Length: 229
Image (cartoon, rainbow, N blue to C red; front, side, top):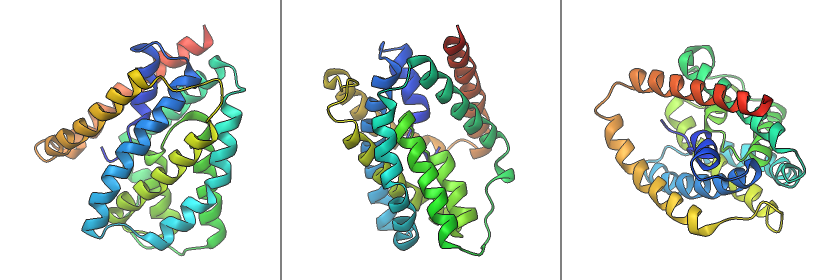
């Protein structure tokens, strides 16, 4: 689907492996950093990474991502779970209505708009452990002015930088990393990404997006109920 996978990694870590919301967010950053960096290399070789625009966008998110990584450890589990559920629901709705957000056309680029969008994405990444590919791609299209193909490749640069910074900021916090669970999870995610790439070539992109969006809405509803109760 062109994302780092955190939007499903976090609920999987919470409900399947028994992680707390804070620990799941930290572990998710490991998974996202590894998978995004791996995919970034492939896109860089294909020439679909806009380094200048992506670097500015990523730089704007450095401080918010680091601050969010620290703040996350202070927030109650219910609030983190509820906030993640809202983000997941927004991601699902964007997938069901891609044309409402993503446009494959040039726009006027303003530096302050790039900085504002990059800072916002960095904050979300830091607090919730979400790489934010579903937010980065439309932002890179509409704010930075990239074409869709370049936006997908460049988003991996932004996600890799933000996730790594947020992960470093969480070092030493109570939400430590259980490497015995996270390492095989991350390795499996990388291998699964290659299989997913082959699957995407055989199945309609629109159908994949619809199925994924519906599943994500169900996960968001489950997490929201869990946060409220």
